[in-house]
Amino acid sequence: MIDVDSFLIKESWDHYTQEEHNLWKYLYERQLTIFERCVCDEHIEGMKRLNINPNHIPKFSELSTILKNSTGWDVVPVPGLVPDDIFFKLLSERRFPSTCFLRDPDHIDYLQEPDIFHDVFGHLPLLIQPVFANYMEYFGKKALEAYHRGELARASRLYWYTTEFGLIKTPKGLRTYGAGIVSSFKETQYCVEDPTPIRIPFNLERVFRTTYRIDDLQENYFVIESYDELFEATQQDHNTLFDKLKGGEDIPYGTLLEGEENIQHNRLL
Image (cartoon, rainbow, N blue to C red; front, side):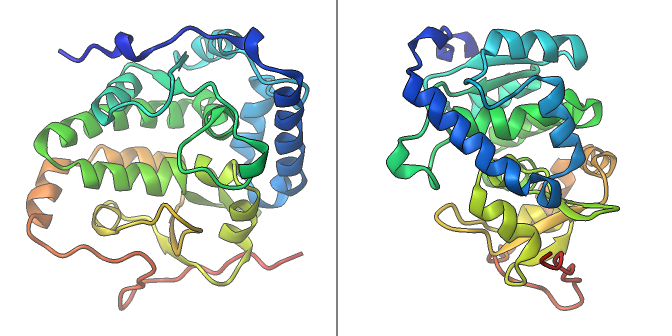
C-alpha cells in the first residue's frame, strides 16, 4: 500500500517573509504583461475564480476550499519533489501536491524543481475547469498503472507535453495551458510567438515516443484542439500502446517526422 500521507507537511503560511511576498508580486505582475496574448482564457479565468492575486502568496487552505467546491480537488503541501508513485497516487485522489518554498531572487528565471509559484500560479487555475480536472485525476490513475508496469518514462512524457508544456488552439491563435510554460516569462512568449520550435498536432502514441529536455527551452511542443480531445486520448488503452511500442526507438526532441504538420506560430504583435 502507498502511504501518501507520510509525504505531506503542514502549511506554514505565516513563515513567509515580506521579501517573499514582494517576489511573488514581481513574478505575478511580470507574467500578467504577456498573458492576454500567450495564455489560454481558461487559465486566466481560473486565476480569477481562485482569487490568485499579486498581493501575497496564496494560502493552500483558501485555494482548497474553492477547488473542493468546484471540482473536488485539494491542494496538499509537500516539502519538495515526491516519488513518482506518490505523485501519481495523489493526483488519482484529486489531491495536488504543491511545494511551499519560493525561488531565490538569484534564480528567478530557471529552476530544475518546482516552487510554489510554479505549482500554484502554473497548475492550480486549470484544476477549476471540470474537463481538465477530470483529465488530471484520470492521468494519475493511468500513470500509476504505467509506473507499476515499468513504463514510467512514457507516463512522464504525457505529463510533460500536456500538463507542463502543452499548447492549445483557440479562436485567438495558439495559447499555452502548460504550467511549466505559464510560470516562465521567457518560455510563455517563446512557445507561441517564436518561429524556432516545432509545434506538432497532439497524438498520444507520438507523445509516448518523444523524449524531452529539462535544461532549456523546449524544441518541440504538442498542440491539442481541446481539453475534451486530451481527456478522450488519455482514456485509450495504454497497455496496448505500450506493447506496440516495446523495443521501438524513441523520437529525439526537436524532430519533425515526414508528413507531420508544423503548426504556424502566432505572429508577433
